[in-house]
Image (tube, rainbow over all chains, first blue to last red; front, side, top):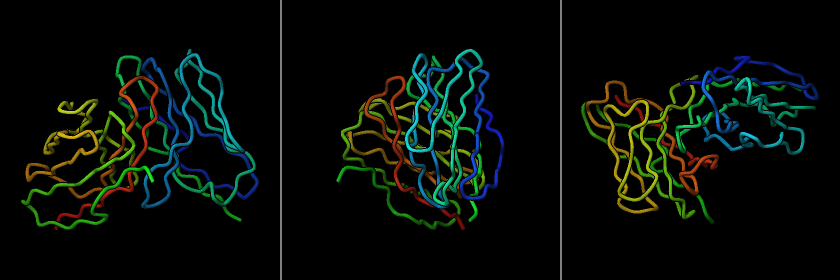
Length: 111
Length: 114
């Protein structure tokens, strides 16, 4: 079942923070986050595993609430390069290696 | 350099013609995937393969076919039975078909059916 992402779109000024949420009605084993620039392939950001720790690198981090089957992606002190569409891909506990992607959150960072 | 290649980048076909999209990886990954992306939408799984000579249908397999004769190759054929084939097609691979494994994407093929 497709996860629900919110918000659908967000506009920031450089240096502002943003949170993107991903919610599923299914029991999840992992949540994968990707960023896609227009016309390009999605680029892997990070993976959150059930029972694992919150992850992050540079100014992008994410968390996974196993009880609520929700994940959040945190972008702090946004840069122009952060612009793009962010997708979460969820892996259900019984789906093996299959990912189901949300419809994406379009992030625009302006100077 | 290891990676996933898809060719061609842009493809134009007449309605009613079958067309095959290429996907090759030299990452020694066991699992490979095909996704379709429509404008402003997320990625939808067409087919996936966890091992050579085996593949499974995804959520939107109708009108598509695949083969997995070699570990490094997973071509996708868009048949004339696919009612609305114009889309951006993305191939991905992961090291193993196990839980929590990361999928890496190729650059994609943009198919336009005239």
